[in-house]
Every structure is written in structure tokens, then in C-alpha cells.
Image (cartoon, rainbow, N blue to C red):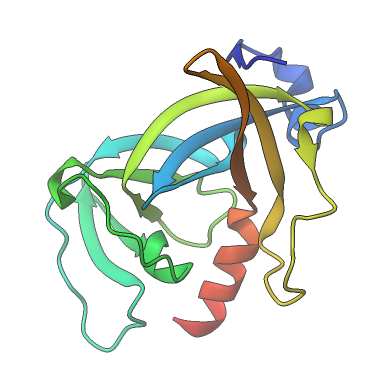
Length: 177
């Protein structure tokens, strides 16, 4: 099944869509190193271009620092470092993006630094493999693996997108910052 373009969802359905009750999921897709990831669309406030990050002393190594985002101090978490992804990006740091998270899921203003944001997509629930989501029982931040069929040189192959629960990942962060 191919990916459908993101369509507006009626306001009354937003919470049901976020919980997967409608049989579809809406995600923001992004790249970290060589891998594709996704987080729930309803956890995202906006995506902004990279800006200078001010480093903070005595914080966890995955906390990149803070930025001034339209007058509001926003903490930036380097998601690649947090998830122990060692693949280098082919893009410069200045070409990276910051996904600003919705204040409703965070206790403070938080953005996550990613190599690139590729799209907002809608998938059917049957495209998500929940059984192989967490090979290690300790990493409970993985919700599932989204399978998307793509054509490469006239062959159809499955592209795998790792769907992560940013709320769980941030709960871990809140206890260590």
C-alpha cells in the first residue's frame, strides 16, 4: 500500500486518530544518520530550521543546549545522541532541523534536533509491525516498525520506518536532566 498524503482530520477525530482508533496513524517522518524515524503528528508543534544553540553546563550529553525561539527559551535534545545512533549525517549541522514538541506532552519547551524532516504521512494501522517493535525489552520507546513499499529500479521493496514514542523518551529525559 502506498503512502497517502496527509489530509486534515476533523477536530472531533483528533484524539481518536492519535490513539489509533480510526485504523490510521499520522506521523512526522525524519532522518537520523541513515535511518528513517517517525513520531506522532499530534506530538509536534512545529518544525524550524537550525539556529545557533547555546550550550549549558552540567547537563546530560544528549542535551545540546537552548535556543531563543520567538522569545521563548527552548531546550534542544540531540535525538541522535540520545538514541546512540553513530551514523554520520551526509548533511551539515546547519542543514539539520529542530522539531518543536507540543507543550501538552512536555513539562517545558523542548525541541529535538534531527538530520532532516522528510514528510508528514498517513499510514494504515496494518502497515505497522508492533511485534518486532522492541527487540530489547529495555527500549520501550519504540512503538512499532512502519513498512512502506517503495520502487527502486523497477523493484518494489519495503522501506522500514522506526516509529518512536517521544513521550516515553522524554519521560526518561525528565528523570535524568
